[in-house]
Image (cartoon, rainbow, N blue to C red; front, side, top):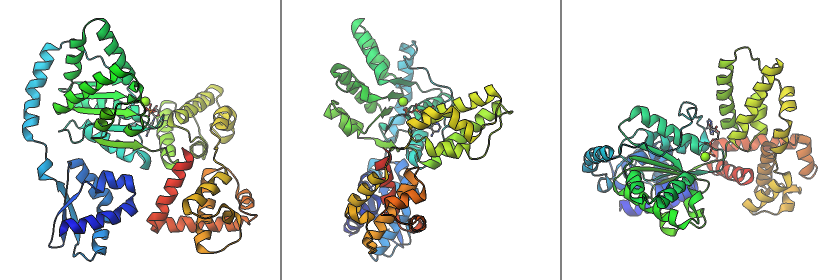
Length: 452
Ligand code: ADP
Ligand code: MG
């Protein structure tokens, strides 16, 4: 009875939360009881209970209520059947000690960047989940998902988060052996061990760690024997209940020339993507970096609006954004000038030109028309029908947010409309987005499509 009900509600939720979210967060839930106004769910991990309760509690409750079920509240608990066996944690310590006494050598990890800490990591919508998951791993508690797989475009903070985990574990759990290295270094060590006939040492070393972090794993795609070794190391550690964290520039399933069995193993844990930054996150990062910089150089003056300008104009990746800010500050202190918009434009001309938004209004109109299944000509044409006017307003809204075109210019590209019509359209969408989940999601999706 509860099973059927949940099946139906779960299907319904897929429409509102999207397919990927549904697979990750909703499908694994089990509705185990529905009584006294409480819907009790079980989830496979503690982390999942927290996350679902915070982020999907409301939608789940309202979807349940829509079916007429008498429910006031929903709860999420760890599923009894899949709770990790406590014995695992108890046996972990002796094994580790034994391993350590035979392993006096240093771990062959890569050096950690002291600046990459949780404190210096700015959290926003695009990286919220990755950050929460990394924090969880950094607690060094029982392994809840294995591996943690972080993926996303270049410069979005994957390496930063992995280093932050390592730093945090070093202070919070100094008893754990933490090994961080890039997939390239993994391969290099492996090849070296083969050459020096020390493969047993290599294996032993990698199997003796408590937390293994391998950065940029896409690198080993197509490198057969390295992949093979990686796979065995991976399995051995997972079997021992050791935590693994992996990063890549794309999702496991999308890494070409990676063995199927490795792909599927990588997908077994928590796969989280770092989305491209949004304006708020970029501004947050700039603010945090400029605060740090100005604490060191208190004499430096900065005019209002400079950070906003940079956050708006430099959208490629965080590394470029940081580089721009550093250059700007260095230049300003060198010539003893205030940091102003003019100065920014002068000293960052090349970066600004390179990151000039490539999205065109035509492209926006085309993508939006496709998405809503209306004709491209209707984007520009005069029809006032809601089913056409709304997508048109969405396109206006995106044109404003994704291009640097002025309102009159946007008006011209929308069939010569007046700029007040454009303002009206943008306001309308702003208003609707506050209450209309579907619309807000559509816009998020379209933005990501065009910004990537
Ligand atoms: P990736 O490994 O994903 O290519 P990195 O972790 O090397 O990216 O990040 C690139 C740069 O941007 C680093 O200097 C990092 O500190 C910075 N960075 C990225 N995301 C953030 C963030 N959310 N807060 C602060 N700094 C960030
Ligand atoms: Mg990196």
